[in-house]
Structure formats: structure tokens, C-alpha cells
Amino acid sequence: MSNLFNPPKTVELDLVGLNSNAFYLMGAFSKAARRQGWSSEEINLVLDECRSSDYDHLLQTLICHTIPTADEDNLEDEE
Image 1 (cartoon, rainbow, N blue to C red):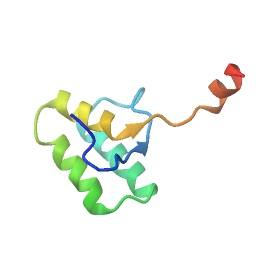
Image 2 (image 1 turned 90 degrees about the vertical axis):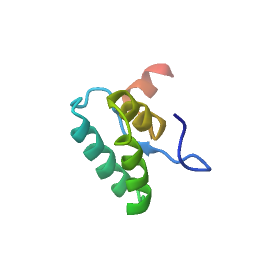
Image 3 (image 1 turned 135 degrees about the vertical axis):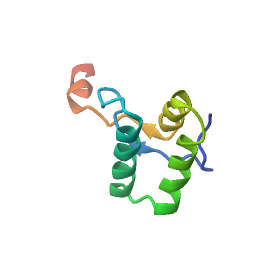
């Protein structure tokens, strides 16, 4: 699975620690994407791809379209 957009487009969203329910994950992605200025068409393109196969495909699709949010505490520890 690769990013559906050229150039690649991502949403800042930490998938780790979220409820693993497929509908919850897609809802979290949709909400974060809307807040970050994605159009409904862009969001639906990703969600349609998520629904096109099994749970593993859903996870891979979301992973390809998200990046973890910057954790300022970890950045301070590295300095």
C-alpha cells in the first residue's frame, strides 16, 4: 500500500494507543483530517480504500496516510 496522493499527503495522528476498532480508527482519521484542512473528497478516498479489503489493509492504508504528532517531551529529552 502506498499513499494515494501525489505528492503524498498525511494527517498528524498517533494511531498507537487508539481503540483498535476499525470504525473508531476511521473516525479518528476523518476527524483529524477535517481539522487539518482535508476536503471531503480526499477523506472519502482514503476511507473508501480502507473499506476495500480486510482489517490489515485498513491499518496499512491509515499508516500510509498518517504521521505521529510531535511529542515535545521526547524532543526535549533528545537535546
